[in-house]
Length: 187
Image 1 (cartoon, rainbow, N blue to C red):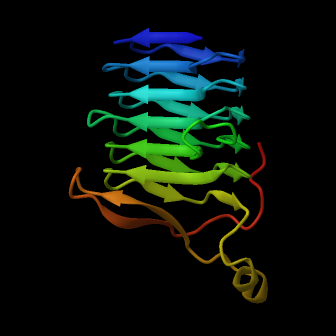
Image 2: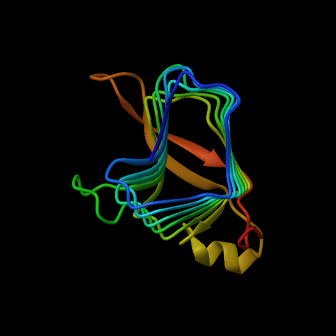
């Protein structure tokens, strides 16, 4: 497990990070401007966990078979992170809570989640008490409303279900990937 606090400009690349009880990679408390690139992150409790971190780039990774969550971005100081061009696959199937996620955004905002392959996660993506995430150009499998996609051969917006507000006044809310990819994104 890689565990960093208040770190800046760290580059984690070409690594195999697997079989950790909690997180494969965990950046906590004001980590910023770090890059996680071209890693295999598998069979952990959580693949990548960012807590109160900003301006980080997570790209071109294979994030697979993590017990609870593939990528978690949490905390009001978690913003302006970029999650791009990753294969996020089959995460969340062994979650104790019964809920598991490919991507979970919790009390975070303004993160860019673009051009990822989200394939066969228990719940592809979810946000809680989060605002203004930018979901764009991701490939979602299984798709919602696949018949409409196939009938018209163009992508229809993909809804991401979540909540907005703070407990106890959380309200159901929807974010949208306005232009999801029709085909898996080459990695």
